[in-house]
Length: 191
Image (tube, rainbow, N blue to C red; front, side, top):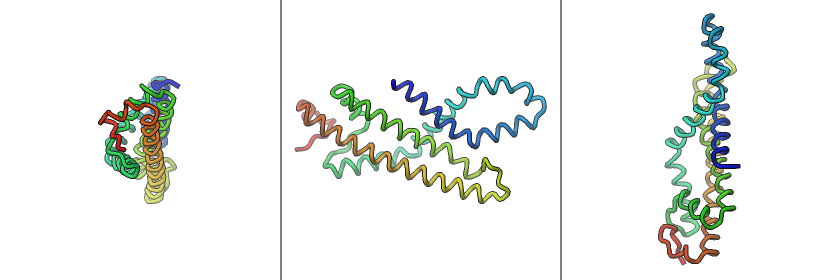
């Protein structure tokens, strides 16, 4: 799968998750208005996929902004346990692309998984205030939303840790197979 196709699918998945709460809100607003229900139906159907893509992209960006420090903390912790200095994921990926393309593909797959979890986390935040099931008691929806958010955050945290551990292994393999990389300070090699 190409990186562009991967991003398209990731953003559509996150947009579909966001549609759990966004769909009922928009449907209620539009269907209760007689003129809008008749005139906008074809437009809404035609713009559904692009709208899901944009919502997914926005959720991923917001998720990146919210979870960036936590991601850095996870990566630094894993690298420190392996006796390495702080090396960014992008740096590891760039060298993997140049020297070991198959490993770079694995890094891409793991990164896609992490981005979906990060975007899903943000896409579910509105569940704290809005229940797609329309519970009479608001606290049931809020409690359910909090539970879903907690589970998604735990999944993202676990996946991010696994990705960071994989990046460390990729670095070790790159150092072992390509001696010239040991001399690059950007890769933080230590004897």
